[in-house]
Length: 135
Image (cartoon, rainbow, N blue to C red; front, side, top):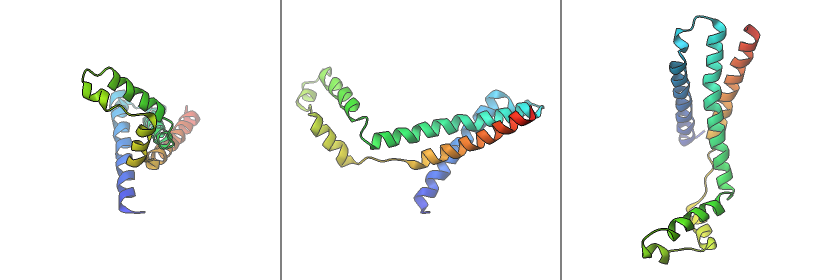
């Protein structure tokens, strides 16, 4: 694993742990005394960022597959159409020009978001199963 991937996964897991602690603080996890409540909040604390990261990873993959190009072009065209400057009207592009520019910039997929989210979701599900067993 190269250095860039290690940094990407490390930052992802730090954000997941940060969201976990934010959820734990807001839910009062550190003041609970009953085991089922604690395990349930730990489960929630990992499921929430897991789902968020999975959705973000899927959205980056969908964007890489050019699914949002037409929507992006529509909003770009509307922006230039209703812009008060005449210079923006001169810069209007056709869909093919817009797509070519997007392709030249490159499209990226961030699989580390999806994988980090799946790991967090797995941890959350494990704690949820433990919660179901002990409650």
